[in-house]
Length: 280
Image (cartoon, rainbow, N blue to C red; front, side):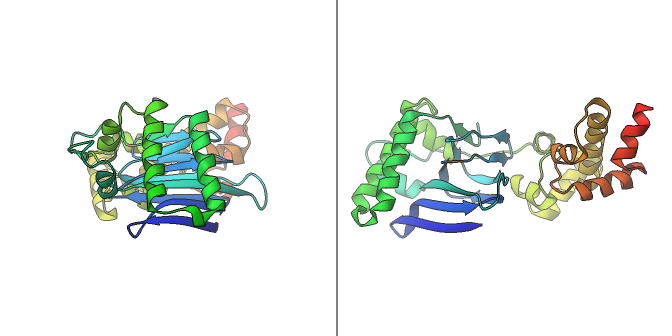
């Protein structure tokens, strides 16, 4: 849930914003014509995309490129709030900012890497602090300042060695992409993503996703993925002393009761009974 949102606009587009959210939150970001730099001040989410399934750390940022991404942030305590700083990178605006400096700024090339976690850095933290000052003093903000802050961010990313060069950064943001369905599914077998969300990560309509999934796995998405989750749950029940609720979360279910019903439907027995039978 979004509790508060402050924005700085440039050429009728929101370029920089500060959002205060309440956990839990699953944020869907679909960027077809821009990149996005997102910094989590207090808590860090799990990043899920066509080629990413990674738990970020506190005070890390992520550089999201064109495509669909999910940021999954679980609740740790009641009434928990998290501040997020977002900088949007529009190709048309970057062209304007770098006119004469970077010819062919938006250059189409083969897809390399979709998104990148920006590791913790004092340099990035100081940049975020400077933005915080302007959010507290919004009357100081004008177009010239926004231009400077966007260029500052890109230069800082280069200096912290998270990207090779400004040109590489911008080119990667808007490169053409080809997503390998099988690799993407295997990456997210145990993520808490619906079939509709997996289709979005694949850049496919739901019907096209189901058709391509059937061709690749000779099964429906729901049946195939649930069977894999049950197989993983069986392994954890045999090999560990994890609680049923922990196993449910580990294989991609936030609702342990739903997991128990699904497990019994697929195996004919409950997780507790399965574990007891294996121990006897």
